[in-house]
Image (cartoon, rainbow, N blue to C red; front, side, top):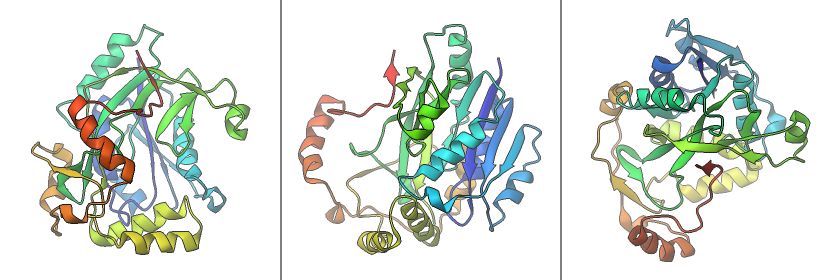
Length: 298
């Protein structure tokens, strides 16, 4: 049984993503780790090489400006790395995701348990979405609680939409031309939380990331309007909660080096009208109403 990790990154330092920490957190259970490294100018590639791991193999890529619609570039880069793995199981971790060292072996144990059970295509992991600073996480109905991060390498899985999850396809042609929607993977839940740091980065990196991310979905004028609208204010969000746990060991240096202050200002919280009414109900009953699930939990 061979486990292959895979990911993608471009200008990780400029955009303030913990890509080195992400790789380090996955390596202990991976037999190999394939990462598509986009055309970077901030030392990203050199930093990965400096990890000096025989498990890591980099694939140099150029981000195609023609794929700046609907986040297609993210799916493309994910698939580039996925196509190069050689393991029985694929373990995807994104550049802003870190697995806690105390839970990483739960992934390996789950794979070993279901390796011979082909009714199981893969596994979903729970998510914890940090926001503003390392001591807050977003806990509203607008964030996903689970996502597919492990699956069999033999089922024809491809990155779905903008690389949030995966589906399996009967033909590459159907996937590429969009005529096949794909089949949801049959998954089990693993107790290995993904510490998601997309909403935590230095203010300068936050601006760069917001602009880059927007450009993958919107035209230039629309991006500029969106950036003015958010005003780089972490408080313009629906809800966050105080984090009372312990971050993965790989993140301790970044957490201790935080050089900006963030305290959630509830008076600036911005809710969609529907969410403002539904959120209290969901808090009471303990689950999301009409939650979108890109998988079949078995």
